[in-house]
Length: 116
Image (cartoon, rainbow, N blue to C red):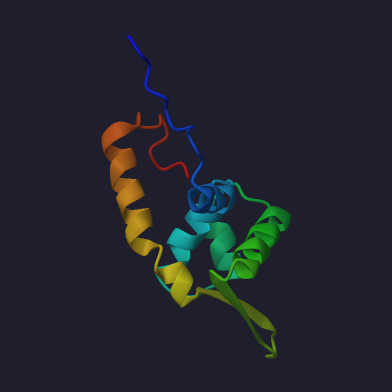
């Protein structure tokens, strides 16, 4: 009996890139929150419970560098910094909704249902 050679399995580079960014804790949640409309830094901090200011700042910078979030500064007074999704970030909304639906159907429900 002859064995058929198998094609070596390859990693999908685009999928790997997406999970490298979206797989970081908080990034998907931040995008999900911003798809509901622009938010200030403090509004995001309150919406994403448990995130520190420095981590939120880092995540917003990463999402901005990836072209998914825009940062705007209103010189005030008082100075106000706002964030909104870009068209590329908004294009992720259907994916985030599907992921949320899949998780609700297939993952165990956390003990603290309101935990984010």
